[in-house]
Length: 188
Image (cartoon, rainbow, N blue to C red; front, top):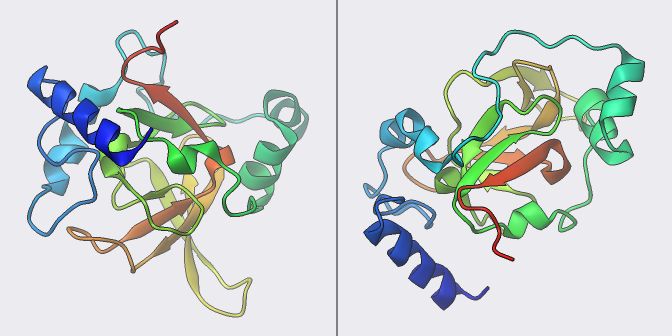
């Protein structure tokens, strides 16, 4: 889908009341109120979507994680691996919806929080509140902030301070650690 069709779709959704001005577009200074995005994230959740509402820890054995996840998702989520840049279709995902943890389905981000960072990984400038814990990562001889799902402990990526306004943050997420739930189901 090209940019013109994407913008037409956003306009149609906006007129239908599904999207607020600025949602799903690259944030411009002062155009997006982070608090509104965080508070109203359920507006982009598909009706009847089966997602956990609790951040109660999900504890599984290593064998159960291996059975539940693809090999790539297992490497990233359970062993802090990194997928190759540009390999995730979620980097190019433009539809309205919610991104959930591939390990436990906890809602993490919405499409309104996403932006094109040009890095080859899905990037977000904010999160749904309370869904991540952070640690310091010194593996590459520099200090980075790593973030993990609070429900299953799965590794998602790193936070950088080169993102767009209004936060200036870039949550650089491995696409294989996410699952996307579109607001509207695909049409046959």
